[in-house]
View 1 (cartoon, helix red, strand yellow):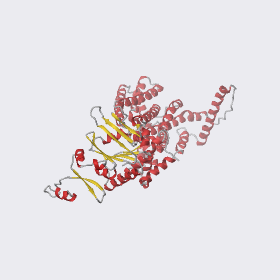
View 2: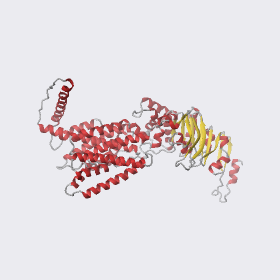
View 3: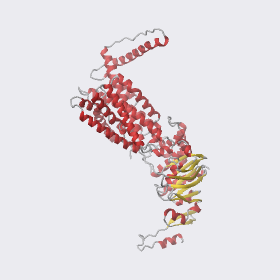
View 4: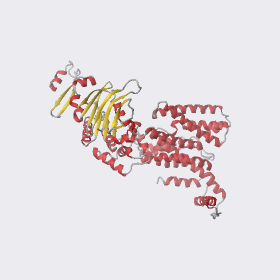
Length: 348
Length: 278
């Protein structure tokens, strides 16, 4: 059931919108369009392999080209972006909650969002080129986490408490830098751009963006999925985990690297999207319990579905887009409050 | 010899020694109790034995192999550890929890298989707590959760159990239940090292007792030889008397204390002395 949810939502999101398409023809466009793309790819590469020219017949196009542009150039990248960002942030958040033995932890606990926000603002001020903004956000996100980790290494351990404290330090530092940049920015031009970026949006996501961020998010997500049972062990405490034979230092490293790659990749195409990484794992826990073996995949599916729905609402509810970061909390908070009163979570 | 600790010493800062010159050994089926006042280094010694902390001097060997050169999972296949307190953040079920004991036998990227579930169930039934299997560990009592911790350690299939003050937080009945369980496991061939605050545990189930004081081992040997008025006075700074109690079939320690609140005159010692026959 849960596995089917994102699939249905993707399909729904593709035909639903200000430019309405009818579901049947959407399905047709999807199937025929992808089939044509595959055929084209085959007829493009086959001659290279065999040395013989190859002309495969293309399937007939029965729709207006604007329809396929809406689907393949505008909605599909946006839908895929919402799935990747929502699923990625949720998995990163769930893993960090296990690693730090704290259900109040979100993926930006080590400063990745603050770093990325500063990086994006810096690029907006200096160049305004979208590619530069993404690259700068990604790099500064990583730099912030590296700084956090280096500070914590002064204590010669990877004690998670020291890590969290250094994360707070680095986060505060980058937030201060960000405020400074906002103060310096042109209030009619670059300042609004910075503010909009910080509120998060998927409206500018292109197919190229998806091709760039999908591999790191999927690979890092798979790493976390592969060690999902070990996260159970880490979540009962560092000393106990080591006594159970877990190489805690290496596991901590793997989780931090994977979650940081996911968050930095997500943030660089979407801007700052709060709430998802904190709350979706809790919703997941209400459904499948605290065992990370089931919580990691559940969080991925729930997070992807949730952000997709929120993004659909953000682009259709009003004539202008509502920033995603605003809507995630606006929709998510009451929903979570409802769940809290309906289902017992089992905290003591 | 399963465990040999040879002239072990440890220091956190390299200057003040937590303990120094500790030597003892443990065979299969043997129970060793560590006595000593709070902060005298019992827990630190236990961490050193599991190589969670590194000794400054001396050597700890498991079945003849130096722990300093062993990987964490190799040590975890030999030693099952039951920590003093467990604070659960996430409300795992007891089954999930006991399954964690299978970690040293499961590859890094793998999850527990059917045989691991079977071993976990075996651990449950060996402790006699199968009824707790599906319960959340956040909801069970302190005594039950201590049993679950012991079951988890058993699921590691260790040659030896280390328990850090296994009865500290338990009520009167649960204390005895845990001690009986440990006794049964030792009779089944597992070596047990436990730290405890109750000298009586030495008489109940221990083959040998070691007393730590000021970072030194002031006594080590049979419980009857080690748990004496003199040693306990040195170790804890209180006066006790040790008596054989026929109904229990063993000796017990009783702290001698003048009670001033009971009769108002400050002489409760006389009736106490009478009742214990001194």
